[in-house]
Image 1 (cartoon, rainbow, N blue to C red):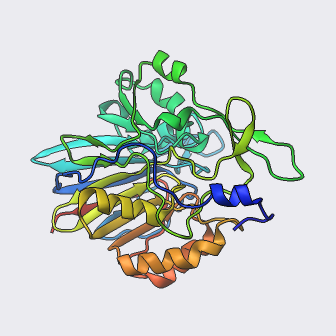
Image 2: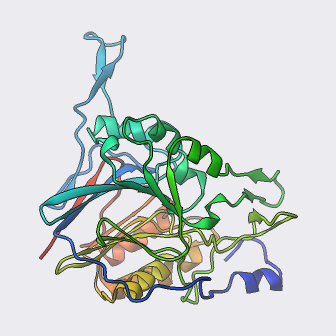
Length: 350
């Protein structure tokens, strides 16, 4: 899986294993009438992608000042960056409530896109972070300054504060930005740490908590990804703080939203099905982390697994990688849809 052979200890550490902590199983995830997922930030923005009855693409109608044009303005697009953020709006019982899942990489990209899409971030119910990597938490700085964003509940895994670095052989090690619990508390966020699954919005949104590693091929990050133990840096293959968001659309099945999918996309879907007792995957959206030489060897078994699961909608984004995108599009042409910043996916009950 990796560019360089690892030691026996590294191989053992990368093997699938059960998650620590008590699993809450089964969970009664209340079905919803509909869910809308708007990708606020992704690696790609393509203003020419077509929409459909379940995919709404943003227009280029927004205008911003630009003195170089005759009327002093030009058409604005949306920001794309190496990060991910999605707005999840659940419709049930005549009410609509929104949760923010991840916040992108930079402090301003997510809030800028939200403004151009007329998304009211001040009306959020809560924030969920998929894991602690900076390309999913960087936009918290911009969100903190929005009216109504203070005192928002924020659901995270307890290991989200882990110091991490990339130590690629032959290069200087790069320590990754680490979230500060003190700073978030100072901004007024109500941080809720959970290893176990959590239910939000009156039992209509499931946060998986820690994911069981059950496949034989999803073995996590290569040796260059390391975590600080308090005394030294050690290989961190599992990224145990990785978690996903799940909604059950009545009569359709589960909608699963991932950040990077460090736990393994197949592991995540299996966990969602086991926890809820719902065996139909309606949609999978988000990063699947199949990019680069360390992960391309598992593209084939991942594609085979999702071919068997047969989702109705498949929107791989962020860190999925172009080789995996092509493979998934070829295997599931009726389900696969290209992701792009600003796109809304509308999933309704049968």
